[in-house]
Image: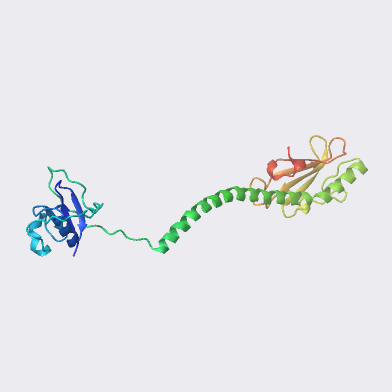
Length: 244
């Protein structure tokens, strides 16, 4: 049987209590026969006297010497103290709260630990991916430049030894397309507009539209003593000696 709820002399609600506890409260004078009580299944609050036979109550409370047991605290479920000028409300039956299984707890803990890791991983990926892409593009440009080293030696030998600047198809210099490699599509040899001698490399097949089709120039300078590098490719993809 469900517990009893009762209203004391100040019309404050208490419970749930067992039938024996309710009888004890009656014997110690905490409730009287005209005190209102309620339990699950009753349509409304009723006087305690209506249940005197059921509970085995004496006609009048019996004084008992000694310290009475403490009054159980009012539960959170039923309504708190009701003002004297208001009717007592039937307390709602306590609602059982669903428990949380160990599996759910483990999932929550895993999610709490994983979410920050995902955030950090995303930040690191956002930083690392562009850096890696720049690195691979620099490597491709550097490979194209390195492949032109034999051509530099050949042009320099003709310029310094013959005191003239060779062009493609002259003195053993091949056609522009004959110097095509993995990332270079052609190399044009000859004299530049400023009178210096050298050659022009055109890049391709790097997979980057800001590099493919762009040019890089090697020239011997005005005194034909040292190779100088310049390019229309962005500095971040060029070796240090070619950056503007």
